[in-house]
Length: 507
Image 1 (cartoon, rainbow, N blue to C red):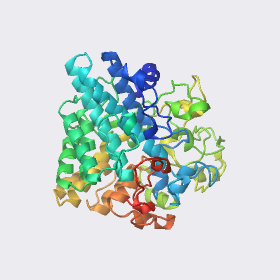
Image 2: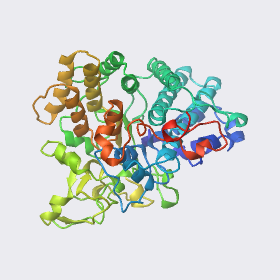
Image 3: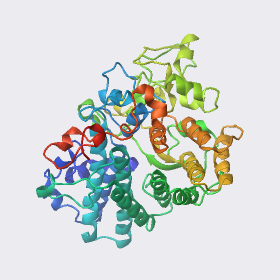
Image 4: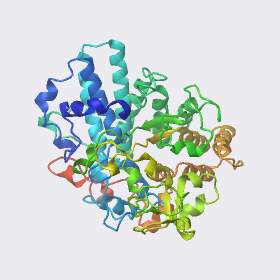
């Protein structure tokens, strides 16, 4: 969506009450209330409001916390890295499981989720009264319901006990919002997605609407929601509709790319494997004064090797970065020898040993960097703003290899068609020239780990399957506690929200 929102997002966000820089989602409502009340008078203003909801998908916090980098840091595939043990503390403390209600990534992840929910609720409330084409209005509503479901799904997975808001909160009641039973949140998510599926288009014009919600996106997300609740048959049905015949083009036009490495070519946006993609741009002129205002991909500078210097003419053209999220030694031993290793891991240790490069050793350096997203000199922004905040590589929120393997997981865990599960995992491996392995849960999760490395899925995979403590106990993970995050301390002040009991609360 960001590919065509740049010209209107500033005005759209200013006219909404829901600014992303607020300290707390409960403190957003009073700001600009009169201005917002006079907005949404026509179709263009409704569209601006929709763009503002989409904008939250690519959220970057002022402290450089994003959903993807935080989840990577928390997994067994990465260390937090960076320049030292206090470099972006929010990532460090989730990586070593010393986070508490006052310190961690939870503040930004909570703000992201509820900023999206609030914006969606405002638009859904306003849409019925806006004079505009009714078919377009129905589509806007479906997109907004899809997005609200997306934000709530992350919130309930990360925090479990959260407020459930389906309309804007009035100023008089903003401190009296209760937490809901997680089952009620899931019920709303399912309801929103089912409603969206009734209206969303099967395809969009990729020249003008790339990134907007489609039927396939909604069904893929609904499959994830069902799988998280262990509704295996329903999950498998949704994924099967998205996936089609393994290895072939599905009914929604999705198909695995022939070459795995092509997934990470910066210009290969919205390709046939992409289902739900977060679009970034180098046109927002991001500056240090407001990191959260950039529309660039900060992961590109964060994961690049620190102090990088190419000596050999055929050395990779990495931009010198900040050395966050180095792969663990254990992950490298898992992917080593797999054909996907070359597209996934930048082995700076080996390159330095042969004299091709030099680089500074960052915190918890292993020599293994996230090649998928390491910024390249060829992709430096030549426009306004600082280089570090204006990379344009997109990221996949959901791609077809992800849904293939999730369907296989749903089938195996739910006692479904093991033959189809085998076909799904075979197609993923055949793409990179690997022979079949049995379609059991262990192999499916290993395949997800290798295929989707660095894309923010591993931590959820571990938690969903009840094996996070096995994988992360040496990092400090405590079973029965660290499967969720603490409620941000700021959200407890002068509200009726209670801390999760795993972090000393009563909820």
